[in-house]
Image 1 (cartoon, rainbow, N blue to C red):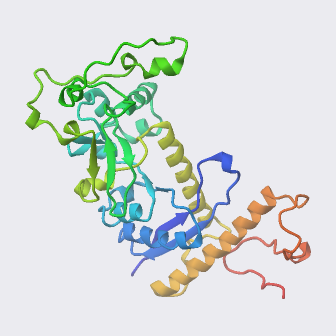
Image 2: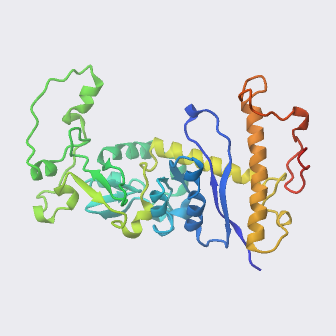
Image 3: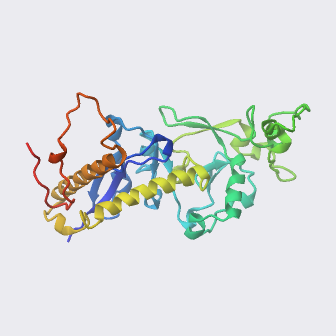
Length: 353
């Protein structure tokens, strides 16, 4: 017996409440053999969205997609303009590799001299510790941020991005004796600081964390590329198979947790609504036709009906009838003609002509 499952389901979601309420809708789906072409099927659902006017923001996915080869998911998703928000398995957390001397730590590029305690803060932690970070772990994640490379230039047409050393630039986030030595940067002149001004205090070199190169330090010719240059250029193939781990928000930071947890909750919520008793998309009796094409058409029709009901329920909740919601020229269906019957997934009254 051949079984097909929802290999990819793309859900519209938002993370900022300032944008107002947002209807929970399925925007694309693909049926396939379980555990086959997971990344490629997700890309199939994403490709049509720009032509429909949907913005490309974050693609928030579970760990099944983190395991995909970069060419199957991460690389084409970035080519479509999406940034990635990911999660990792226990053995994938912590230091994942390096590129041009910069460390890849939980998906972010970092200074090679980041203290080991910070770099290994998530190494070996189980899922329980990640889902509910302790105060100590939260503090370590926050302390990592000054050591992360900063995005200097977004991907160009070839997908190449530039990242800046955290000790470089006019506003470095840390101090580094190695950087000062290699780039012949002398000590800065003493300046008067208004201690009542928080910004001035934070901008002073003494207030920034400093890295400690080994003593004696390595010879200049043995130092990594990131230490020789103010910036490095990272091309799509530079990370190799490790590119599947790179994401665009510092792992477990407030911005990462806010984006990932909110969108994943909306995705799982929609999955639950599609499988609940009044629609029960998972029940084979709802899809009696044989063949992948027939099954795909039937599932698409069921999801379209579900979207219609989700949108209708959202409008009645967030657009009360006593508030104007459309222009005078918009055609309005009389209330007595609106279908209020329960959603069964099997029978719905025909539209009234």
